[in-house]
Image 1 (spheres, rainbow, N blue to C red):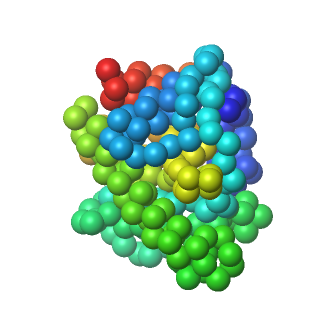
Image 2 (image 1 turned 90 degrees about the vertical axis):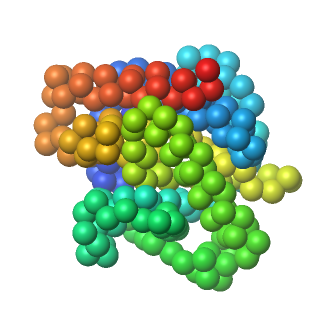
Image 3 (image 1 turned 60 degrees about the vertical axis):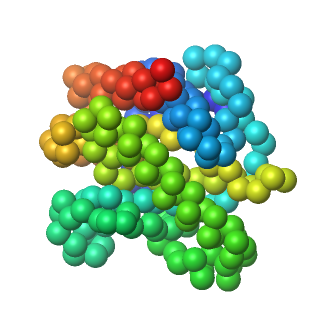
Length: 220
């Protein structure tokens, strides 16, 4: 798996190149997968073999994004009318079909089963694993004084069953240091940029580099 420097938002409507993003994504994803493996959660990760390159198990990707939310913000607030900052206990779990043309519509477990995307057993496993991944990463981030607000992951199907696959990098979550949105470290900074000029992109890269360094502390 080769990590590239592209950064996008709005289902690809907004697109730029963030210098060294591929290397930072590779560092972040590698650290997260190593940490999850140490926590007993199976992933497709095997090894990191270069600044931008990981070796992973071959898997048939399930075209669903699996989302866990601790704090209400962003599209969830717009979609549901829930007050910004509402804390969920337990976390809210959601599923979205990967379809840029339709803007990744939300689907239900029943939809996924009916459309042949997953078996009932796979849906149950993926939802349980999504929650487990969130709780493990939330604990790791909390140890650094950072609130993991929400998280999206994907799964791949192998002969051994479903594995957490694709990436978990700084595009995959919202991170609020001290629980404060104005200090966010994640891709939302890019989404809100009206003019991604050199100074703004340098600031964005600084945040991505900080996240890469912090995730590497998860596994020592």
